Image (cartoon, rainbow, N blue to C red; front, side):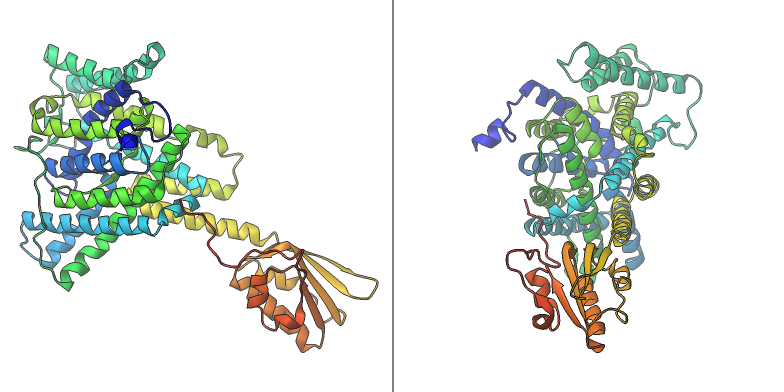
Length: 528
């Protein structure tokens, strides 16, 4: 209990002032994001705000990455658009309140799947995401964050850009916010520059009565962020197989997208803070948060890279900042809605612009001439897919698949054989490089079965059989020699290979002291 109260997650002293001020800044930044994401599928602003509160609180207390902020996200909101369309096709005339109950049920199913992923220790597989994919993911998200701010420069209720004085005021206030965030840390780091920027710009707008876009203006007519504690909402839907078939696929997509975004954000925060979080613990926390969100009238969500970077950049490293953000968000909803709705959007837009600039991996441009072309292609492709489709799961999965194929192709070309005939007339093949599904063809081409002498030795001391395709390639090559009545000796194979080879006892030369002990097709990644 003392560990949670004092928040010593990485055995470092907690700066309570920094944590609390950073949490307040994050809470202010969460408000417009949660509202905007709730409006994407047509939900009430409170649906997004309740989700942000529950997710931020639960993951901050129980998550695997102190300092990381979770809440309602655009990636999850977009998924519900598809769910709503399917519900309307299957149930013409369905009421909006009934749709919300299906959404809450979907969020609960997603949470259960995420907990299952954590208990099965699947969080470790995020380590298989290559660095170029990480670069592309971060750059794509930075572009999304940056582009998402431009609608705030439109005239209210239209898709036309502001003109004249309103545009100049919005632009000037946004630039002032960015200038304070950039310049204040050069003078002092006593308080988060993001919080100071929001307060200064808000004071100017409210004090001088400047007419500019506010938080209230981004909501639909008659809507408000004023509310109470998140109300209990048990999904009132038919418990039938048809219902399950509708919500399960969307629940799985929500769970997958949420975990991918959360675990990649966790890795990014790990690098920034030079500490290590627990992926499996974060999976369980995200799942628990989404289940509670579904029962407390929230739309669900996942980790938010923008708010997480605001938090970490302000110096927060412990759980207190996230807890503070969640509590302050609830305070805004219950008691401070009228004040929060008057906040100028320019201050929050400027903050998010700085987050986007800080998120983008500018160093990735320097790697263009140094990285392999395949890595550059993967990085650019993931960036474009993420930025254009907002489908993080597809972007990351495609990046991983292309990286894996490129890696396999490069390794397939590395297999080679050193050949010589010794004084006894025995031909030796010393194999170098991995023998796996991609290199089996080149491996087979190394042998001159017809013209080889009656006795052949194939030595794998500098090679490794990586999968069942490699085992099958060995079976085929030894079979070709056997048909011609020639004797083959295989040396320096692991016991696992020997066990899987046909007629192994007739052709294997076992050397207990020198034979390797690796296994074929075995997961050896240590789970955290």
